[in-house]
Image: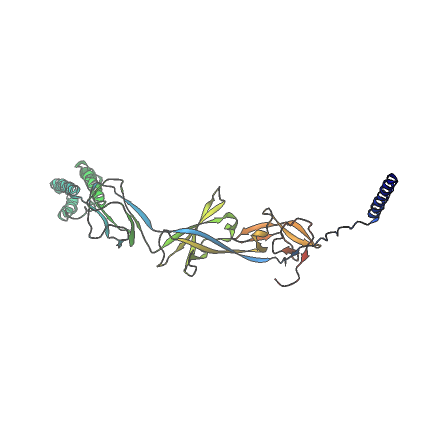
Length: 372
């Protein structure tokens, strides 16, 4: 009996399992909803080619236009001049900057002058007899001979005979040796060629100065030059004489008016830039200051200015055509710090004004209809 009961229960369990399996098989599986594609919204700007002004902003350092490095050409002990020989000292034009002791050389020069004077004196008796017409001028020259003044020019000979006679007495050789010594003597006192200021003093009074030794740097603080590097693409729009605004890099309210005075004819191989030199002056300017130059070039016709970040591979931009992004090639003409002037876009085309994340050619987009 128990055996039959067990068999019946097993049959019932099998039937129940089969029923449940069939019920599950007949149940429809729930389908996942399809993801609907959402087109990103883009901001656009309608292309309108026009004449775009070019503004070049470049930085550079000031250098004094009039500056000299003074070197010694003679040897001697440097003497005080009555002013402190230190950077920052001002000198007027013609004022002595460096004085080198010249006692020994001055004595030699005076001896040479005396030798010339004696030679001229020795020829006067012969001139009176053989060349009476030349005697008067040589006698007058000798009477006006001043040992404390530079040697005057010798009288011009009236004839070849007179010239040969004077030459034979070694007078011309002695005269030119004397003039040469006078020139060397002048190198013991170095004078300011213009009103200026010492920017560096490399010796001190009392020290021994040797030929070829650098003594001082001297500049004129009245006028300066600023050297800036400009991209070669903008050169056609820059001209010598064009006005330039120069400003302080830290305080833009400090501005000076400058002028382009030179444009180098050589392009730097590495940077593809050209040196442009700007002339300017002002009370607050100092050599070595780092300034910015704002140069206005000739406007570029038939172009448009866009953000540099919109460029793709430096030669392409995205436009919206038939509700999709399309890459078009452009010609970058001039790069500013944050913008670029390009050619090649057609009037009426819709160029994106803000970058689209993950953008690609053919990407479906929706144009923003509100106000930016």
